[in-house]
Length: 208
Image 1 (cartoon, one colour):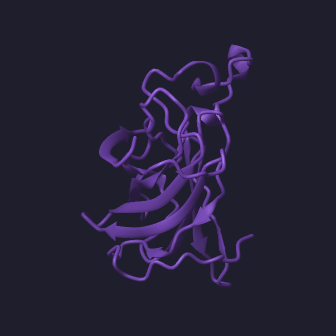
Image 2 (cartoon, rainbow, N blue to C red; image 1 turned 60 degrees about the horizontal axis):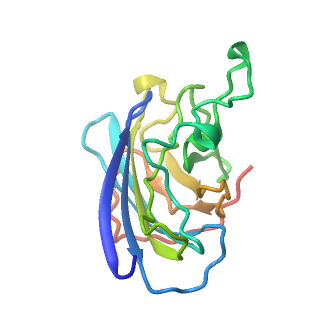
């Protein structure tokens, strides 16, 4: 897809509402690794109510063969919701039913960012759609935008509180189940707006 730009939207609602927005750009025929590579671009936060934030995260990506994204029909085999070799009583969720993986880090009193533990059925993972409709392998690069409705102060049993300083760790997978590098976003404060034009420096924040 040379010089082609498009936008699509995906909405998922488990215990939290997740929205995925993707803006992809494809240029020429550069040479990239076959595993996806991502870099943090920006993060912004809106506070539409007193009890939730709308967080938007953008990252840039590049991939050597363009096997990125899942369609609505990709629900069997390696993309099934559950691991298919398990007995019904041993049902285990299949990580690769999704291809966009998100965790939240919160700054603790000692200044270290540590993973936040949510209820077992609550996560922020999702899917981005197929980006290459050319019918052949080809390198792709562009930008993925991902949106999360983030609740706090006990709403939906959220462990987050207004005023918490948080960051997000993100990585993605391609159709061959190759995972990208992991990035850490710039920080936001829960309940406080932040525009994407404000400081967006990605930092290698210490975590435990």
